[in-house]
Length: 459
Image (cartoon, rainbow, N blue to C red):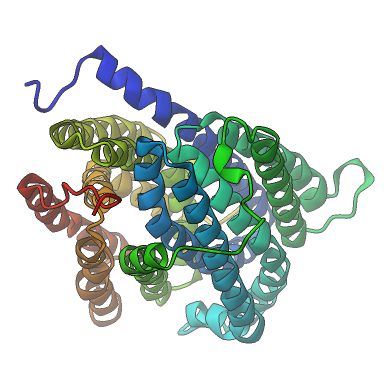
């Protein structure tokens, strides 16, 4: 039993890292939920167009996550070793990659935004609704583009802080930002306190302001505590990066960047496949995913914890402890998500009532929420195995395990079932999500073999 379950000290160590991340992600997603509900009170078309744009922004967000993750593998192990020069170099690398990815996203959204939104508005039975949704989506996207620079800057700083064990400051900054977002949403979306009623444009503006607030808090606080976080001293004094580190980070990080890009693109393609069944499906998917994001924070935060704890064990050469920690974390993540999934199912009929939409959309959303909640232990387990493999630098394997799986299994399955069968969309969604069981099996086998037990900074 000790192989799969730890003692109280083990779980205290987990929760010390995971709980602040959960709180930050929980508050962020809860405010996003309220934001989504506020937009949903305006109308179904507005909610659908915002959902489409957020799916595109989601691809950018995960590209940033993937771009920073390669350097993050080294940061965790440098932190375990106490190497401040190494942390300084990896943070600098994160800033470089963030600038490149953000410029690329701004160019893509600026010149091809309409075409990207239009991919989700094909085969619609009502062309007038599709045209109006495109107008709403374009307006929302143009404003949201202003929030990309502070997002990557915050992630570059906050990820390094977490990798050194400092999870409270990013949590506090995130809490402050979401409170700002929530207040401004109420004021700008509905025109409260004498402000103009801006609708979805108000939601976008509120998000942008909150992102700059979060960025300023994280960056300024980190530099004001440079004695504690010595790696920020001289961070901008030079642009230099050791050539061997660049090669190693690129070698380990490129598969992660490609993986996150392809995986998020795969998620976008899944929604596009479902969207051929109508705008009502997009609206229902939006409602379902908004609630699932709240409950997903448990296993997502535990995944980040796996990366930090296992990475630090590997960096200090404690291989057996790393292996034991990974096994226990996989079990803990799956069991925790089984409980949160059942809790999500309990809200499957109540939550859709918060939206100003049709009964058809509400009923469809309720069914999708139930499916997601019942299957939640599966992505929780695969998420833990993914971060375990990644912590040891096995990024090529995680690339095959994650994004390649989505593109060769999930996307073709959704494409064929949505277009060439008459199956109800709920059964299509259930079938696609159930393929995660195969992924769990593959992930467990790879972790059990121990191929990820590597100290990459010494190598």
